[in-house]
Image (cartoon, rainbow, N blue to C red):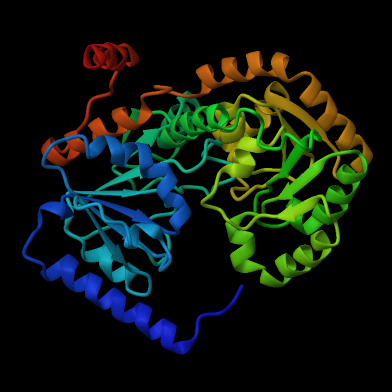
Length: 412
């Protein structure tokens, strides 16, 4: 990863200053009613279904803050989305932003340098992972949100239990679903229709996608190159897709991995995180503690192979909640678990999962129905909540049958 030059950094800072002038001094305040914040360009995917539904409402315009100077939204020409680049000045911007609704995917709000708005903004949290709230994430990561759009029943149970234990002020916990899975599933179906005949007609070998989490003892740190080599010897093609945070925080590790994979003709390193091609092409996913496991399984209806690396625990007190984390319970329901130091067994497990794909598909669909609210309509439901909060300060939980009836009525 190349470092930005001082001139480039100065240009970015000047762009921030212009954005702040628009935010705080611009005459048109309507697009600051509902504002989204994205830490990186990739986080736009978690908002996409919500934003598309909001823009179906006549007269609605949105603010969109991004801390990624290369975010495509900064160059997009959507007249009702007003993008602003803020990074160095972000703590100041969030503190003084006078939006009615501020929508974020960022955990740990108000715990560190990024604080709640002093101007009365209603802070809404949108999940960027389907995992539970109490093991992978820090204790109290959601305590300072006014409304949390719960992806599934496990989120609602865990956050209610947290509230009972610590007595924090009540946030609205709303059953919303997970718009990114809906978007990913729709894109996957469209891709499969366009990719028939298969996208690799001359190479029938199955494709394995290795997509780990970030942090200590992830697959990239432990065994990615060795695993890729073993899978290739077993007759697979391999794509390794590191987590964006690993790429950002450990460029030397990524450079070493890139050199090693370059010597393997049937392996590749993917750093194009805004592309879903490898997710759609993969016959099986291999991961550790990355939430891509549930996104891949629920969107493509294909199984996952989990490597038994050390648990990703950012909250050492997670057992105090008395609820088992979803990421521990669901592994053997949507796939298998294998040991990272036994690559030949990993290859055998991958073959089993591909062979038994249809059997796993039935189980995956059952898990998806149990784990997610409003499958297929979550973007619309989330947009309705946000609009209600912007207009009245509150939102009422939407029952699933109301959305189904509304969808049928609109279609007719």
